[in-house]
Image 1: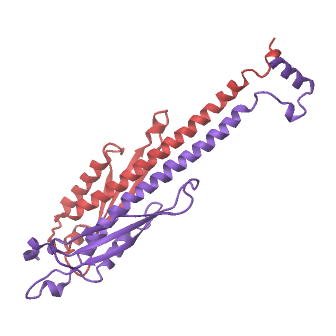
Image 2 (image 1 turned 30 degrees about the vertical axis):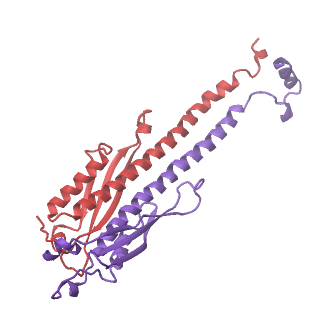
Image 3 (image 1 turned 180 degrees about the horizontal axis):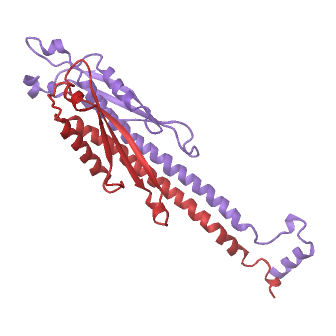
Length: 147
Length: 168
């Protein structure tokens, strides 16, 4: 009786073996899309952050504005309490950027550790560090302070 | 039909491939087709997305490059007895300098596509276009380097606007 069934059901058995691989392929496509989305958001956040820091006259304000702009762009996408930023140059160089012949650039790096939720939804976490740097010129005609 | 087929394969002991007229292995054909389509989709999602990212990146960099160029104001004209704001002829060096600090970005390079300081009637401004080139991560759909160029961005120094000139 069993032998007469021949190959019946073999397709189903093969499919059971192949299904996880197919699901994994779809996950990789979805994960790739998410990776790209976060990458783009981090880049945009860095450029917004540098833009808002570059118009400030006060270094402390510039750092907090850069942080606020990055956090607003990234929303809850980053783990560990939101994006972290670093602002270059330091307070003194920021305040002294008033020589009209020597341009001083402000550089903001935004770093975000994010989990790709396409993978998290099926039970395993794929976390990655995303980072991008943006640069803007400081207007030498503005008066600035380092505080 | 089905029994006939199995009988025949049994009889020949499946020595010839052409006689293996059954469903075995048909899923693996599907898996191969599915994998190929998935890979093409991944290439489209990732590299198509990279191109869109490059467009916003080019626009944002052009904006900052135009601001940097517009800060390069001729000091002699500004301090003359009748002060006027004129952007220096070499202001575009500052735009190039700024853009070079963005390049190379993540899989992208940026360069100045065009830069013009405009000192005509009205407030002077600098106009900059930036190009961003992307190398595709999965070169299946987009095979070569893709270059996108931003729209022209204009910027003027605050000193350059008529109502602010007294303060500069």
